Each structure stands twice: as structure tokens, then as C-alpha cells.
Length: 111
Image (cartoon, rainbow, N blue to C red; front, top):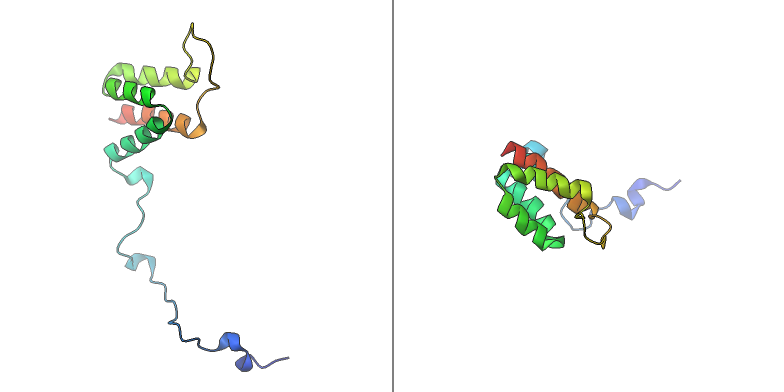
């Protein structure tokens, strides 16, 4: 067996050694989503909806703060964006949009 002191993997390379600070010593840390301010959470969810469905995002902005907003959001979630009497041209919402709509329902109730 080879002597570990002869192995080049155990010699200094000239680079400084990495020293990890304790987590409590860190000045900053990523903020979990549930700790973000309410408006920042709403803006984040609205940005997701607006990225895929601009007209729906504009309608939500108009309704926001009214009791009808939650009903509108729930109708979107349950119908997948379909309206009675219209041809079914879409297959519902993408998962991230559906999640954003559900989060907006919860945030509107908290607001």
C-alpha cells in the first residue's frame, strides 16, 4: 500500500482552502416564499399568470380587492379557462399557471 504522504492529493496546491462559515454567521439568506411581503407574493403569482395569459391577468387586476375576484379565480380553476358557449380550443392551464391561480385565491382571502 502506498504511503498517503507521497500521494499528491494530500499536498497543498497553492489555492486557499475553503472555509465554510456557520449558517448563523451569514449576513443574508434566501427568503422563503411564505416570509415574503404579501404584495411581493401577489406580484410573483400575477407575473406567472401574465407570462402565459395576459388578458386573464388584466381581468384579475381589475377584479382584485372585490368579492367577485375569488369567484372569478375559482371559475377559471374549475373550468380550465373555458366559458360556456365557446368552442373548446385549449386543454386547460399549465401547472405553474394553475398553481399561481390557486395561490392568488389564498392570497386574496388573506388580503
